[in-house]
Image 1 (spheres, rainbow, N blue to C red):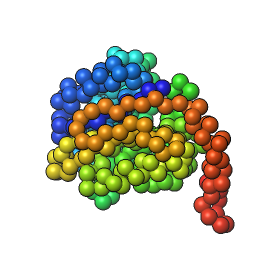
Image 2 (image 1 turned 45 degrees about the vertical axis):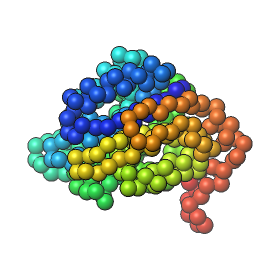
Image 3 (image 1 turned 90 degrees about the vertical axis):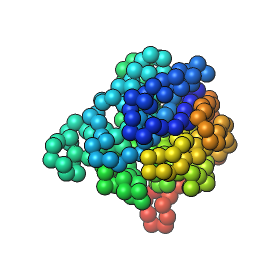
Image 4 (image 1 turned 180 degrees about the horizontal axis):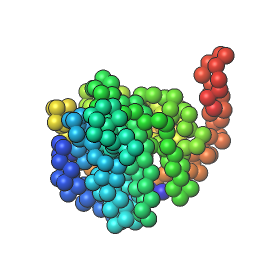
Length: 269
């Protein structure tokens, strides 16, 4: 499977403008042979915590992804603020907060959702977004794909727990330029320690609060090699991934069966 990470800027809190900007970029990725196209975290709004930024599950951002997937006959993914139908009341309490939700839309109308497990407390995300319940793994054409969102990248244990059933991790982000070394290092670390591909898609440009983003999107092999990468600027990062390579790496270097939390603690294999 060929996966593309679309490294793009975001018009702050303007869904329609972002849809107009991103549709041609998705088309270019498909023209380059992509079977799956990954957009950034909060691709349609920016990493906004303005009250009311949430949209209903299946709202305009999700529909955009579904429309692009159907039009081009590929899978398209990105995260957006969605209020789950069983929680979205009018009381203004915690139950009304959205999830930071990665929507993975398929060419035949299939939709999968992963809700960010770790709201970014350093930036106050935990006050404006709800936390998800657990990882989600989707099999597409024999490839087992597990998505995560931005700050999740710092928590190795959730990657570990999903590793036995994962060939490719997708990590979509609004990772700040001030900590770009962390982003670059952690993408490779998650690939090496789990012997799986990692596709990292980070935005570029400045957010509404002035935070700068450097991009540095990348596709990393199960051995930690950079298969494709980009620095700043809008571009497309593209690489082929093969579940057979994951299986061969894990068979050749049998590290995962030795994984444990420590003496006297449960196995994490």
